[in-house]
Length: 235
Image (spheres, rainbow, N blue to C red):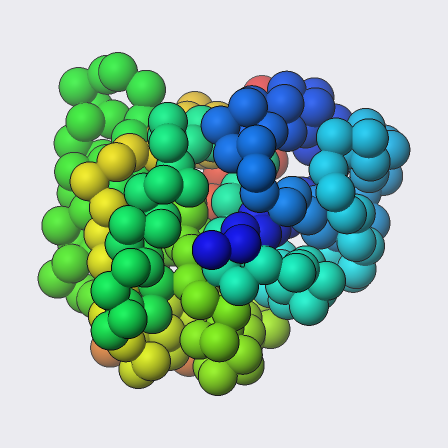
């Protein structure tokens, strides 16, 4: 298998070089594509020498990932956020999952840093995802290129593009959860509030399954998450 890793970024100058070095170490044989959303802090310049390709689009995560996927040469596409720690032997694990031809793709379980509250959060995220049959981009979703093309890539919607993509992939074949963990950054939880963000995510996911329009969910997200972050920053 040939692997292409697509990393959507926007104004990630403080962490992009360290992350790409980490990714190159853990997945040395993969093609790494950084999809920048016209960052204003020099992210693209910092990433250029540490990735195989750099593509730039308007700041929309779905559009960025779709552009990265179109530029990719691999037959396996792995979408990874720029603030995570990927597991050891990650490519071997993806290859193992995709060895079964009935599998369209998969994802990793998430792990937040050691803390009792975070243990509840990442456990809740896993079992809620199983119950609601959804996964978000934090889980490091991967898929066959053929499946990506068949579902038309990520829908360019205001919110939940990763969940929509996951659900579409399930129509192409099984989506397998790897036992390996991808460690995600707690920075959003710390900025917004651990309980507040966990409850907001749970509410939005539940309303999504009930068919509430994405435009309404986007407004809820902006009020509960973005507004809280701006308030904390001001204080």
